[in-house]
Image 1 (cartoon, helix red, strand yellow):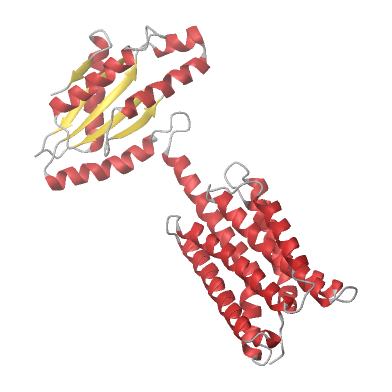
Image 2 (tube, one colour; image 1 turned 120 degrees about the vertical axis):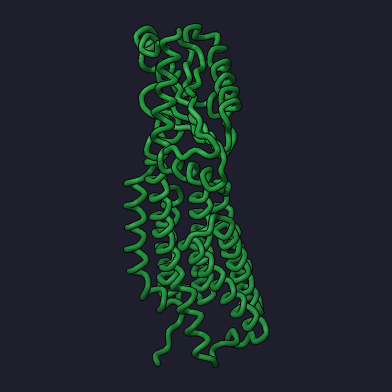
Length: 380
């Protein structure tokens, strides 16, 4: 089996790391509003490659200690970039001074450890201890996120890397001659392969996490109204039917409110559509604030909204509707801004569908409109 040292392995993985970096860069350009941290993830593999060239090129001109010091700085900055990228991606951003400070500390330490007897072991201990701290914090940041496949995989890879560096550091400290591993070729190769492959595996995990995030974004766009942030009509039926089925199993009541802003066309014509959008957003926020979980609120179309109230009988549903109506009518900036509400309820022993309840609530809403608007009507 051929001997692979750390610079050789990094050189072999460099091309793949560059390709992955380009993929991340492309994703970042296509989805700049949703993805953060991709710039750091793109640069990190490239800095890892610099570690190889730093050692191979500098050792022919400068003492080996300088070449190894430059390599260590590059490897430390690679870990720092991975950590910075993950922190931005998960919206736990580090200070903008983190990377410059890390660079300054690393360069100063490598310079400090280059001019006295025993400096080699101290330099290794410093570099590897710092790498352990950086990658351990990266693993902690990932572990704290909701558990998905990509995040579990990322955390496992980084945790394994921390263990690998820790073992190498302990062995190197106990056997400083030759770093304690030159006589154990397989240990050197496992360490080199495990350490350098991280430069490829972490960006791959980043791509998987980006894919997961984009899927969640698209699902949220399909389920949430872009103007108000409440559920869409499609999401209403998906979640509402689930609540309806639960109420049937528990022999519980379920009520539906159909809400419609009165004279909304007049608001649009008088103040403009931008004010109309503001009114709709304000209405959705006020109404949502008065609905506790698991109540659902959805924009049914235009200025019409539907609320599904599980385990709520007719009397309670009317009280909730009256509170909503009073809150909307209390807006002093738009004195003509009112809401009419229709209420329909499935009895505990009833077997109505969500669609039929919405139709009944719509009939009650029509009665409220016919009776003068700005009122609540219950259909029996």
